[in-house]
Image (tube, rainbow, N blue to C red; front, side, top):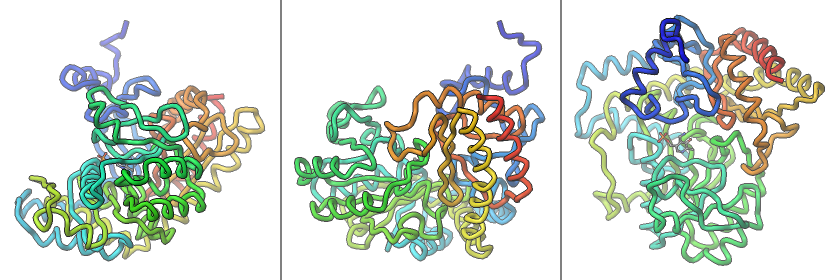
Length: 436
Ligand code: PMP
């Protein structure tokens, strides 16, 4: 039985939360179900450090799951939000802040001539899908096993057996008729693309892909596979939608498409463009975007879309990234982190408890029970999750917070110094040893 008198403040707060919210949370991964234990409640955060309600300070490698590329409570973002709030928290009418962020996004994005702002990544992808269906006059959708595109019905589909299959819903409550329109293919497999398009090319409206899949570990794709994907979609008149909700404005100013000179038809953004406030966006060539209401017949709207606080936060964050050489500094930070991790991982391999690492700029992933990082979901060793749970808690006890799931990536941010990386690396080394 739990000893209520001795429970931590977070445990007490979590019990309270569970009485009024499913699992005590607003998003499932926060409930720690895959690593066990009670999630610490955050009281405040600054830079790369979080203070919990238990009075503990944690070095944070989650960064709110991606938005906080400058770290928590960056002064430029806080000031922009405060100033905007004093002028009004929501207008539901055009405002300059919205045009300013749109101009910045259009300037930096290699794909978007125009953007439409929404309030989350989920809204961005579901709206881009609607647009793709309208443009092509087709209903079919393809996604890849191991990619995540938010929780709209069409995307909550998992792979069935076989090379290229129509999926089965991965959530209760999704109509079978909706899942039946979504095909799920393996990543890193050219022949699966051939099989799919030979049979369903003429009815496939869109293929969605994360340029660097970062939602089931970091499953970086081969350039040949990415090139094949572009060719085969173009050949069949299917729109290629690159979901840059994580990679946009993180891998570089132009995100994945900019870094790789990759030619998407539509693109979706989120996370970084909101500076920590809720913003998503979808964009593309003008010939597609002019199909969006009120110019065209593709309806999509939002009471809080283009909210002045969110727009100000996003513009402030992008401005800091640009003015302070943010992307080059993040790449250097990523390289410095990788250099600290490599000897630790070699030591684990030598001890017969292998852990592999993959890094892309300021994103990284440790894959437990593997010597090489995989490129597809079904190649991730399922056994690694158990050791990850032990590692996660051993690390948390030492004041470093990684994501509470073996399948989530780590995020570096500009508030981290080499000294922070030294501290974290030493503790990662100890936690790896303790979790063998
Ligand atoms: N697409 C990708 C690639 C994502 O990583 C996420 C969220 N992790 C989403 C879409 C959905 O974004 P949101 O959680 O803001 O709805």
